[in-house]
Structure formats: C-alpha cells, structure tokens
Length: 354
Image (cartoon, rainbow, N blue to C red; front, side):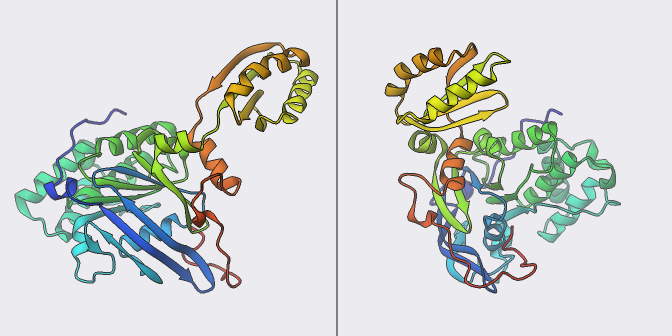
C-alpha cells in the first residue's frame, strides 16, 4: 500500500543544537543479570538512528531507560536535553514511543485512539482534530481511521502505533522493533514512513533486521550482550570493517568440483572465510589485490563450470557477523568484549533477555 509523502514539520528546536540523545555509562542490572553494561552513545539531532543487536542484546532495556519506563542502575542519559530520570513529565512531553508489541482497544476506532492520546498530551478541540487528521495522513490511515482497530491488519496496527507516538510532535521518536512481525509489504510501508521522518524528528529505531537498517538509517550502533560493539555512519562502518566478497555461482550438478574448490580456497593465506549458501560460494578475502589474480586459476584447476561470478558489495550483515557472531573484529571498541554474568540468572528476568 502506498503511503502519502507529506510529513508535518517538527518544532525548530528538534532539528537544531546538540545531540538529541546523550548517554554516559548507562547500566542496568536485574538481580544478578547485567542487561546493559556501561553504554556510551550520542545520537545526532534529526537523524534516523539504527540500534542493532541480536535478541537478548539489551536493546529493549535501553529503550525503556531512555523513555523513563525504567531507571538505570548507574550512569546518566539525556533525551532532547532532558534527564531521563526527570520526574516532572518534561521527558514524556518531548518523546514518542512505539512498543515492540503494541496493544490497542479493538473496539476503538483509529481516530478515537489518537484523540485519546492527544488529550493525554493536553490537546483539545480544533487543535486536537487537526493533529489527529495530520498524523493519520502521515501514516496512510486517513480513511481507515474511521474503522474499528480490531479489524486492522498487522501493518495497519503498526502504522497506527507510529501515529499515536507522533501525536504530541515529539522531538525524539523511539521505535522498538517496528517491523519485525510484519510481512514484506507491511515492512516496506513502515520503512517508507520512517525514512520520511528524517529531519522532522530524531528517530531511534531498535531492530535485529539488518536490511532494514541499511535501507533507512543514517547511523548505526551495534550492541551485544549489553555492551556497545561499535557506532558509526553506515557507509563508514562498511568501509572500515567489511572485507571484500566474491560470489561464485557454479552450474548445477558439480558437487565434487565445488568441494575441491572450497577445500583449495580454505588453504589460501589471502582467504578469511568460505561459505556455501543456497548453491553459491561466498568468498571473504583479506586483500582483493592478491585474491583477484589468484582466484581464477583455482577455479580452473578445480574444474568448476560457472553460471556467474562477481565481486559483491559487502553488506551490514557481513559487518554484523564479523563484529558480533565472531566476537569482534580489528579495531573494535574494547567494550565489545562480552560482559560476565555475575550470578545465575533469575527464572524470568523482566528485561535482561530482551
């Protein structure tokens, strides 16, 4: 479903000044489980910031701390210049939040939900009606706003969730796994909405889906076991960590020849890794200047007939696997080391596993 392109402007202070989010030494412990361990982070104002990590890395815990839904064990953080521990309601006036699994009253109409949220933020009368109409248009639910939420699809409920998080014109919008449960069409619609929010608000999006981060985010931080592994602009991260990749597509029916080839490749000093995935051989090399001339003779000697051969652009997934799945790479922030669990985990810790 196509969604409208108009996005209402944010207040001037939302796109000017210093970082939208500043985190220093933020930590959270649940009993003996360390869910977040000394996070340091700055998020530029007006950016779409990807907060990336595997399930259990501490992403949801971080969002709960930054939105004031939980209190840190130690450390400090400010959002839109406001301490996250402020108890005077200032933080809530300047942020929006979409939970990973939003629940709405099915009997309510979409418009009624947004009116309810608007009243909680002090909007009334004509100003409330205008804002509800604006956010419904932004998320592509102008007509559906008159219908009961119980009849919404999963994608429509997520769009409504973004709408309710935007009613108060937040300076910072927090989205926790906004597309993880959606089908491809629903994911596309939500990502288009998020991309158009760039500059209108700072978007802090937690996710474990790497392709989505590459599509819409300016910068990314990678979290693993409660600690920051690295943080960078995506292009800089790819240039810094991603190693060159060759994709070899053999013609079908060459199992023995492909096994000879992969065995020969794994013995080369210029090869970092060899993976056979869905019939393709993916070759990760240390130095393309050495790999290029050496690779073709190896293909010929193995007797592999090729359907295709190319040098592929490294992806954020390749970087992620290098830094997280393989325990970090060269130049990784020392904080990338895995933290120790100081006591056996509780049977069901509230956030440590999220």
